[in-house]
Length: 196
Image: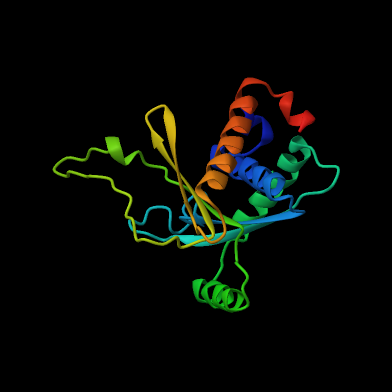
């Protein structure tokens, strides 16, 4: 598997390829992506056996160098993501204050937000508990662009949420199609990485 070869988790690989795709689509020299972290993945973490929601929002900022290939970008981003997880304590109040300050100046904290659900809620069965999954429509996007992935058996459902003042439906669909196409190429042929 490509993620293992790159020394990354599957979610880390998807996040890195998303960052590369966004940078290429927007013709940016850097990308900033926010993503939630449960804070439970570290072996021996004091939170490992606690039940409840301990989500934290992490920020990944990565330069896209002029001579980067997808392979070199993935190598660098994989290392950076590992560093982020090692030093992941971010005070939510500080992040909220920074986001408010940036929003007042007409800027956004993230280029996009990436969420990967790790539970297939359509098939979650617990004794004595019935669950029904749903995606609430609150009528407005919380972030400039959100990519949410949810496993659906052997496939992954992709949900996009975006601010229509920044992106049209056609543009969002085009970006998602380009990202998904790149992921499909990568799963078929590793040589693709050195040509992009």
